[in-house]
Length: 102
Image (cartoon, rainbow, N blue to C red; front, side, top):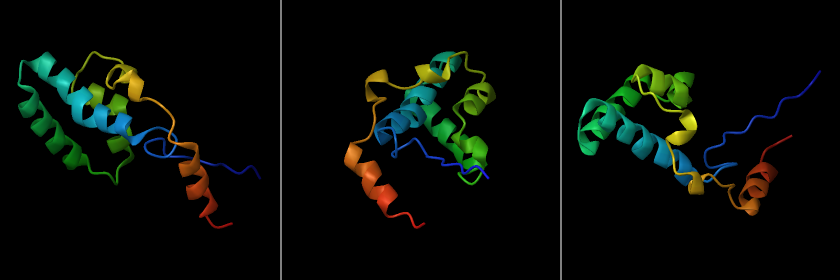
């Protein structure tokens, strides 16, 4: 039987600041532009929508889901700052993986 190893990119393989930028800045900024709102109002609304789904639902983690839900015509990779899309420090992954049993 094949074994699958799955990693959460956010904060494990990729710097967590990138995810924060996507969810708390990129998507709200695109929403504000699309609907003529202030950034703060858009971010407040977006957060209520995130909470309505909750982080127990896989859709919460799907950028494309949110872009479609909000009718935003932007590619998923355009919602963050590319310079923040970088690997976490090498020691972080090895420390975390060494604590995983079996």
